[in-house]
Amino acid sequence: MLAKVWIQNFRNINQLNVVKQNKYIFFIGKNNQGKTTILEAIYILLTGGWLKEKDRNALIQFSKERAVIGGEWQLNEEEQKQVYLSLSKSEGVSVVINKQCSRDKKTFTKNCFTDYLSSDINRQFQDSAAQRRHFLDTFCTQYFTEYRQSLNRFQSVCKQKNAWIKQDVVDQKHGDILNKQLAILSGSVLEYRIEGLRRLSEFFKKTQEIFFVDILENIQFKYMFHRLDIEEFSRPLYQEVLFNKLQEDKQKERFLGYSLVGPHRDDFDAISHDQSVFRFFSKGINRVFAVLTKLAHWDLVSEKFQQPLILLLDDIFAELDSEVKTKLATYLKKYDQLFLTGVNSEDIGLFNDIDVYQVEKGKIHCYEAA
Image (tube, rainbow, N blue to C red; front, side, top):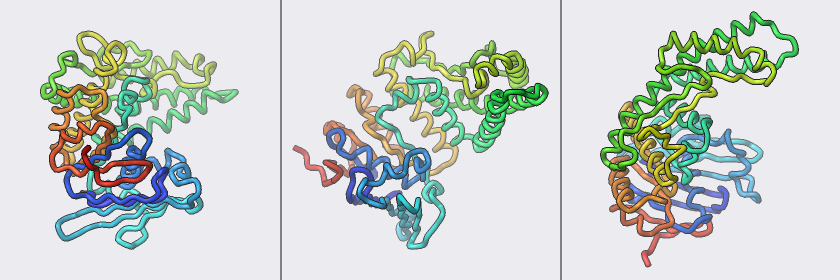
């Protein structure tokens, strides 16, 4: 597990050291003090994530040239691995492992599965179809080893199709070929997505039995085919219907300048008592739904690959009632290592054997109860 963390010149943190004594680490403090920043730094260290998606310079303090995130991984009782990730405004990203330079920015991913859960988890499901697709694609990528390859192939042909759409003069036969390829590749993507939703639904039912939230009883995950009249998925039928729709939409797509149908436009819904959770249920219920769905996600990945699981949970207990909090804390204890944040000191009592740090203005010190 991750035994030590060092952070320097990262956002509002000048210098910070965290040493693990217990299985769980809780960062407590008021808003805008640096709790989330600590989790983000740990996530970057463990996964190499966000280094391309976010402006690297925005992660480094304005007056500094370089930020450093370091960690010590306890491989066994006698062996450790030390990793330093350096982010430089002028030199980019460099990695040092046990005092040796390396090009591996994802060194820890070989040892564990890490996930970060932001405080605005509701947005992942409630905001838009794009957010829900992103969640489903992320899960399928982590769970099905071949999914990312299938999705990349589809996305590559989709880009070619969009380029074809925007040409002043087009070769209609080439458009037919692209549509045929898209229909075939989409079938592969859909098989993984629908199977992924089925497995998530099964595990969701197990977590629901533990948490027993009445309104989410017998929930069903439903794949939504955008602009296609399909009730039940069959790959041959789907590919035929999609190809016909792509052919039918040729002129309309040329006029609009983008493709209108396919996996990149699809969505999924969660149905309970014949109503959409996302559209008709309260913010509080949607937060519980989001947490339970993420638990299903983590359990499936952990069970399949038998890797240690490290979770970075940003204010996960916010807006949950005391009964759900207690059940959630009990459930989380089965995971290998937790880094949590919160503003409510009462949440600390949900765990035994926990390290608690007070965070104030980018600095930490051992928490002392009032």
